[in-house]
Image 1 (tube, rainbow, N blue to C red):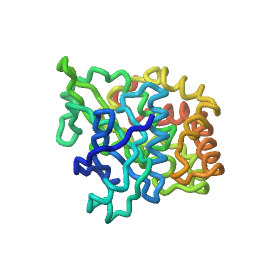
Image 2 (image 1 turned 60 degrees about the horizontal axis):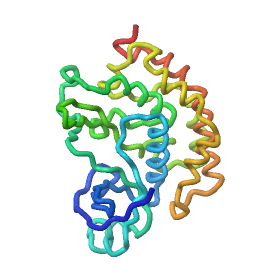
Image 3 (image 1 turned 90 degrees about the vertical axis):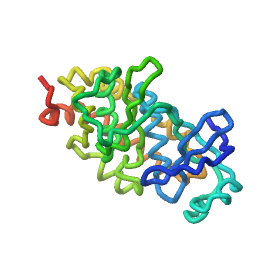
Image 4 (image 1 turned 30 degrees about the horizontal axis):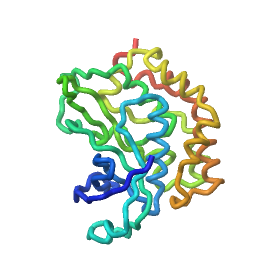
Length: 254
């Protein structure tokens, strides 16, 4: 789905410099820009697969940002951002990141879903999940606190991947970094089962459907899409072995 930015809220976050925009659906989105790297592609693939697996991530959209809004921002003009379709994730109320929080004192209502994030991070080779700023705690209206995660920029062999780096990186067989609160939710191989089984059933048609949604303006050609598909379909066969081989990283594994 595509929404249109109507107002720059002039809030910048993260190393990728995402901007908060109010959009025409009445929601606020943090937008990452088509900037010459593969960031927006990685975000699209990551959020699409997270949605397929039913993982706790915010909603994502294509966000059309006009050249007029960009020209009104000194930051965006300086960075050379151009008008068009970019990638946005919806702002979630009541969220804080994990900087300074004592993990072992937290009660997280959706903790049972967290092992699924480990499955996805190892499928996509996410090198940045243990960054506290990429993991959020949301206080719900009921008072319960739920885990949310954001940011898939550092996946698929990084934000500057190429066909060559995808080909080499797809065979990586060690466990990706695991954020401590996520690791504590794992008590054995069975913790991963629902997401692992769904990942292993991931079809080429499903992956191709995700990649077909990449806007032409993002500059991803057919050969590059084929390389991403091959990367994902190869790695889905490796996840079970990677998780089992990394059991020493999980304190509660029995």
